[in-house]
Length: 158
Image (cartoon, rainbow, N blue to C red; front, side):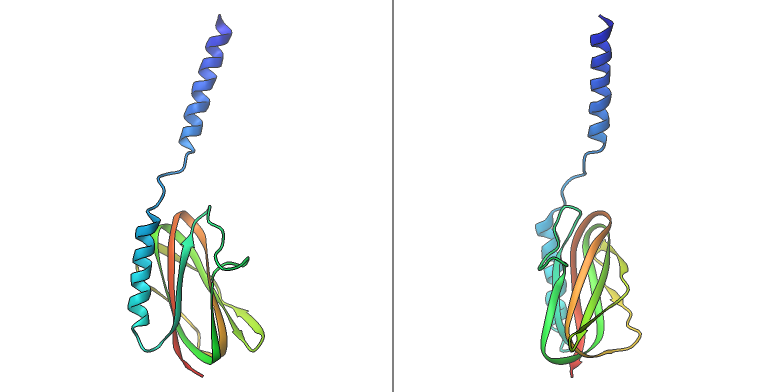
């Protein structure tokens, strides 16, 4: 009779261990996307905004747009990028970066960590980026459940 009691005890211990590893509640993605959309709508009202984008960043979400992930903004004529602002709505933190294309060459930036607290963060450029014909905004999960990333690119034509 000792064997069934040991098996039952083992089953209880495993059950408690597995339930302790269960993920927390799913974020309210619709609400987070609404907040990101409001960030973008407020930003695009400015005259210096060259474009914007948003997407979900979470461990179980595949990258948006293409296999490299992110949102690509293409420009018919070259632009001067003077600033990039980013915000994340959710829980935890993301790593955000961008890659610009001048002619046919792509050049990346250093990624920065952004808390998913809804605060706007300006990504510091050492100098304006000249003759940019595309920019890819990307992000990956750094910590927590993730969120919806929203970013705007500011500058002027050519």
